[in-house]
Amino acid sequence: MSADFAHRLRRHEDEADAAARSRALRARIVMALGPATMLGGVIWAVVQPWRLTLLHPHGQGAWWLVVEPPLYVIIVGLVFRLVIAPGVAEDIEEAP
Amino acid sequence: MIAGIMPQAEFVHWWFATGFLMLGLVLFAEALVGPEVWGMRPWRKYIWPGLCFVMGIFMWPVMTFFTNSAIHMVAHGSWAEFLMFCGAAELGVARGKLHSQYWRLASSLALIVSGTAFLVHEQNAWLFSRAAFLHHTAGWTALVFAAFPLALAFRPRSMFAASGFAAFFIVLAVMLYCDRDIAPIFGHFSQFAGVPHR
Image 1 (spheres, one colour):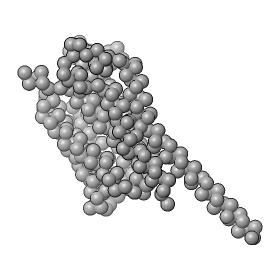
Image 2 (image 1 turned 90 degrees about the vertical axis):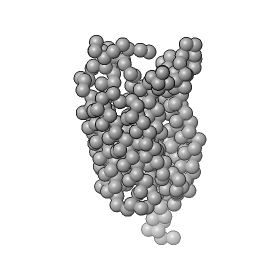
Image 3 (image 1 turned 135 degrees about the vertical axis):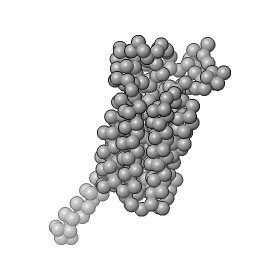
Image 4 (image 1 turned 180 degrees about the vertical axis):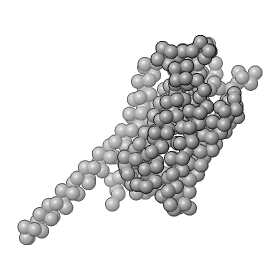
């Protein structure tokens, strides 16, 4: 094997490794978006517990019992994590 | 009796915030992985334009039932129209019926019109109340962030521009979650704004 060919082969391997690392990182970020959003909702619920009227339902109207904004944030994160993120992460790995 | 059944305006803001948050996450994921990976499952291409279009449809009842002045109604109507226009243009691109990359300008136009509507229909000063502050902030944010879809029209593969466009919806969601019907802002509250609650 000529030295020139060996260098080219090595460069191709390095580039393939870098591409694989980049793909893995992107997949991890996509998978983390949902949990990060859910964490935001949990922190909001802890900081402003009165926004969760289900925790103290007495005397609340029907709408106030349905509308729980920190839970909405958690649900968005959960839906993204369960419905959208797994397929995206899988496709990143399989992309040419 | 109807007033008792109707949800408060802040609830509606939080519902739209939830939609915009999902929109932001979807757009950010698409920006991160690129259009090729995103398009590997055809249904994914329709998520954000479809969500945008549906939110435009839901904005019409908001315009009908939750506005109390002509300018307020016109602002909500313009948001409804441009959410639907932006969603329809992107749906056309996703379906392959529209081919030009310049259809991305629809999103930029939507942000410019929406931002202007926020600013024009807010008659009070920044620190009048929380709603007034958020209207001013959301308006200027929309106008500034309109640069990102504008950049995407000319550089469709720019991850920076795509991420910026996604960030707009997340920032807007945070602003809408901060909204209350009548509440102070940074300790300021006009005596003409009403009685704060919760």
